[in-house]
Image 1 (cartoon, rainbow, N blue to C red):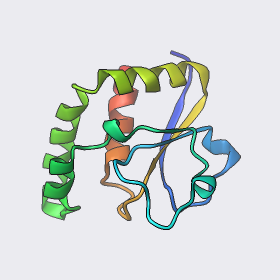
Image 2 (image 1 turned 90 degrees about the vertical axis):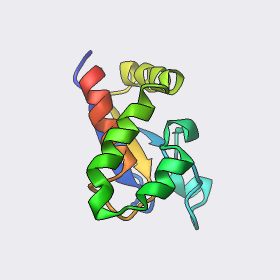
Image 3 (image 1 turned 60 degrees about the vertical axis):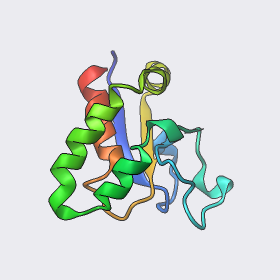
Length: 120
């Protein structure tokens, strides 16, 4: 596949033209953000971690690595959503995986980017 750029970004950060296709990868809509403010191209609820995994993780520092492994396992069963992102990657040079959590280095968007970059 051609040169692509996938980056995670908080939904609370201002959208930029360089974001390209903005895909919300959270199961829940972000608090206090309108659809217009979010400026999303897609909302893929089902690519997000399961409710059980999200609650178990709770952004605990000691569970980060296990969360990553469990979420990567869940992604194996999300072929429809992954195919949709793959189709976007074929058309767009830049995509932004939008998330809500405060932790910018340990979240589902970071893990999903890793997964996508290893397969596309």
